[in-house]
Length: 96
Image (cartoon, rainbow, N blue to C red; front, side, top):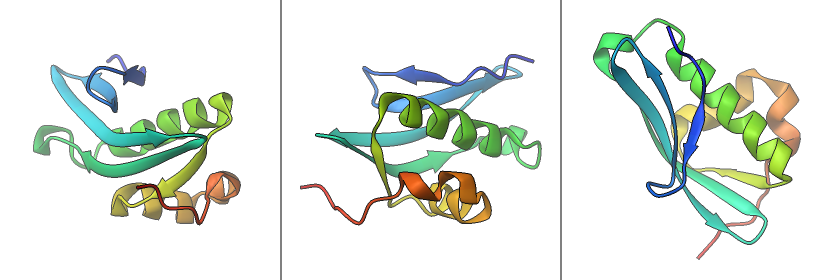
C-alpha cells in the first residue's frame, strides 16, 4: 500500500493512492493561507484510516510551507478538532 500524500498543484488538491483508488482534499490558496474546501474518500477505502492519513499528510505539508489554514471542509475541520497539534495552523481569515 502506498500511503504517501502528494500535492497535485495542477488540480489544487492533496491526494493519496491506496489499492488503486485516490482519496483527495481540494483546496484554494491565497497569500499565506490555504483553504480546504472538500475531501473525498472512495467508498472502497472507507473505514481504513485513509482519510486521516490524507489529512495528516496535507496538514504536515501546510505546516512545512508556513501557511495558515481555513477549514471549510467538515472532514478537515473535524480532524483538526480531534488533533490539537494542528489547531495552531487555523486562522480566522477568510479568502475572497
